[in-house]
Image (cartoon, rainbow, N blue to C red):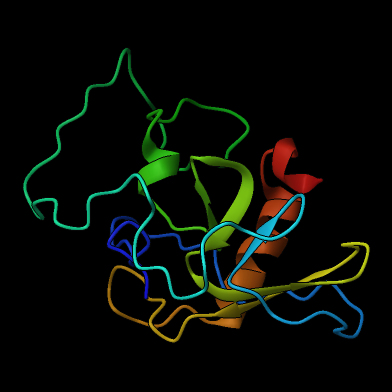
Amino acid sequence: MMADYFARRTVGALALGAILACGGIASAEPAHGIAMYGTPALPPDFDHLPYANPDAPKGGRLVTGETGSFDSLNPHILKGSVPWQLRFLAYESLMGRSWDEPFSLYGLLAETIETGPNREWVEFTLRDEARFSDGSPVTVEDVMWSYETLGTEGHPRYRG
């Protein structure tokens, strides 16, 4: 299964994830990951990234610094200043990178990804264990709300 790196993170309030269907009828098989060219290097049942130590100590405390100040905890706003690491710590995405495969993504909240023949659409299937920090399940409606809200009210980089 997934290593702790890919386990659900319970830090933060916003989880961008779930099923996102952009239209069309499926013609490809669902996969555990996607690569720009060919197939992802890791098999569907991998349990950790090649450069991660699955036996690393767990727990502890992380303290970070912030240069200057901030006036918002919403990393998707147009105006204002947000702590620079918040976008990496406050929510989980559908997929995540393997840093030794520059153009590959593997499922985080998404268990599988399916795309059209020309990648004109994408469909994600959520993991059953995808949860918010309070333990409630991440649903399709949650993902669609995030997608639609960012696309209509979010920073312009998210509207495209």
